[in-house]
Amino acid sequence: MLDPTTPRTAPAVQLQLHPADHQHASLLGSVDAWAHTLRSDHTRRAYLGPVLRLLEHPAGFSPAGLEALRDHMLEAGRQARTVHRAMGAVIACSAWLSTHGHLPASTPPALQAVPRPQRDPSSRRSEPRRTEQLALPWPASPPPAG
Image 1: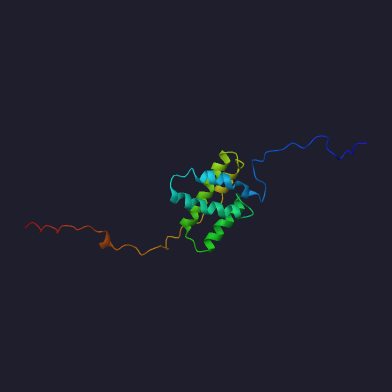
Image 2 (image 1 turned 45 degrees about the vertical axis):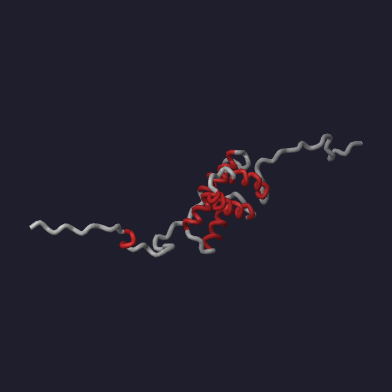
């Protein structure tokens, strides 16, 4: 007699396009392909770092993962513009991955909804330039007409 719990046919092999929770590391090859679409080596290095750090996080490409990356960078003393650029890199990569079928289409809009840090106008990376450093030699004023 046949056991009713035993399947009669082998289960179909399903191609998984969208990673499940905690499986975002499977996107590494796709992220590498995205990085090669960036023109500049400098941009590639700057953008790839945050994306790879996000892949290591258990939440991966999710709002919780991006918030964790943002908070970690801010706690490490990174400036708001650096964190803003890193978040932009993650969103750009997620859009590319979504367009190519590696992430659900709902991922990029969800990541865009994560609040970005506000730049503190009182903090400056370097001293402001002095006016005389910016000024060009200017001819003396003509004497007043008499």
